[in-house]
Length: 143
Image 1 (cartoon, rainbow, N blue to C red):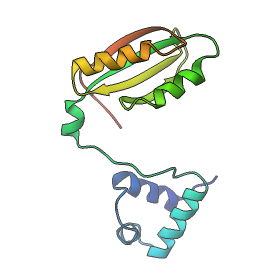
Image 2 (image 1 turned 90 degrees about the horizontal axis):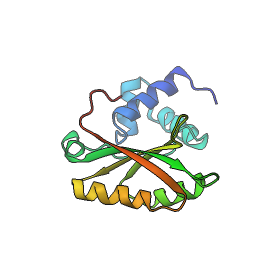
Image 3 (image 1 turned 90 degrees about the vertical axis):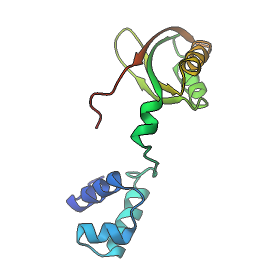
């Protein structure tokens, strides 16, 4: 899949505001509305654009208590563990990593008690051998 400069500009416009109308995006890129629509359809069809999402306000995100949970898993249990994690709304991301842990899971909750419960739920998933949790105190840089 080859992205043109205009495709990259279109993706940048969507990152800035995924709810912008095709007309507004077309004006900002200096192309016609039909051109934007065709490019969007092509990028969606090729799987470059997998979906559109909500960007939460920083005040809401700052109220959440977040943690990274490093997990060691039993051999060949990773897929089953991830399938169970997909069912848990507080799980924001699951990363497969190298090093002493197999997975790093990003979780968020609105209270310490709720966060503790989420971590207990992760520990209880069959195939999870060991966890180490780090509560995130603040975000210094995010892109």
